Image 1: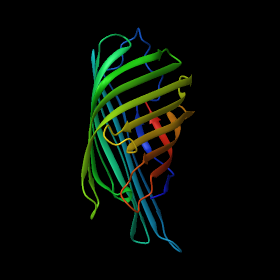
Image 2 (image 1 turned 90 degrees about the horizontal axis):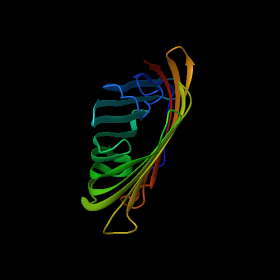
Image 3 (image 1 turned 120 degrees about the vertical axis):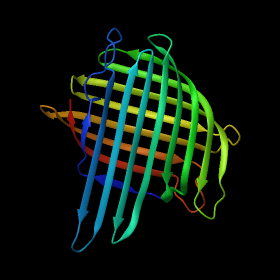
Image 4 (image 1 turned 45 degrees about the vertical axis):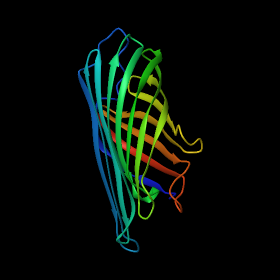
Length: 243
């Protein structure tokens, strides 16, 4: 179902706004962010929107664990108008300064897209094409399996899939950056069945440890359950406290 969710404020704690460590500098052992937001209107219309996000990285070279999640819940005139969330755990094992292997597990729920639960299991290899103080560009290729529990009355399904991922970060200054990533998950048994996830974000320092993050996310399913739209889009404006 097409929808754009506007979140006016996300108060968060983050360690990801600073410039990434250079290749010759060890990364900090812990960094991450967590944020919560709530918006309510009343009077001629009644609505409530709640959102949250989480990202925690644990570096213990040559390994890294990343726990990540996000969710949105909204009501309009006492009727649920948005409900989606996801959580993921990713393990990276570095072989060289640029080459690594990864394992990824992701669980998500989006009933308005026709998905009660989707479980994604992936593994593969990654490579840092660029890794400097100003620019980081990485690519990942792999494969795995996706299982979907679709909303009633549609049947559950599962299929082997490939995975291609690309992520780019450009640091304008120490606390101002541009982020872009895209993920492609095609079925290996049905060529017209594929998922695309994408996010574009700009983070700008406001004053001191405060920064503004504006992001746009697209989740696309080329073969959703019947009577459901193929894409969901989310716009977020976030005020972040950095350390």
